[in-house]
Length: 126
Image (cartoon, rainbow, N blue to C red; front, side, top):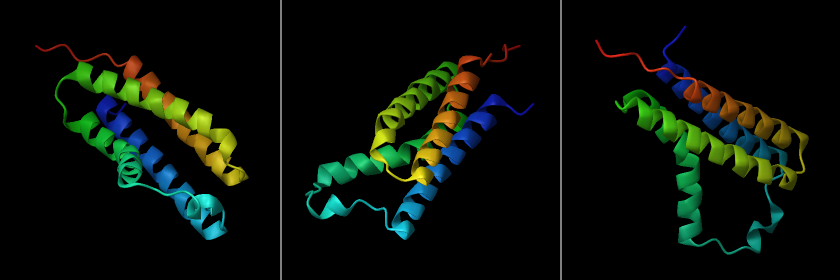
């Protein structure tokens, strides 16, 4: 069985790739929101979006590089829970079947992150 840190990092990579796949498919299918022309995005909004999309990448690094197991464990539980709820509320706003499918897949990955982190038993130092 692989180390829990590696499993968590792999799940965050998979989550990030699912988000990126959804964005690419949305652009190529023409499902990109048409009303973006009517919404004035501020620098703060773009910063928030970039932080949101950067989080899975940072979690992959946190899962591997942070030494304190409790920090890694709780960061994974809290952030995967946040993304699960965020996507759950966003799910009805996507009209395309592929988008909903990909959000459900990412939510499964979030649940797996929570389960692995919750059940993680850190090795006892000798």
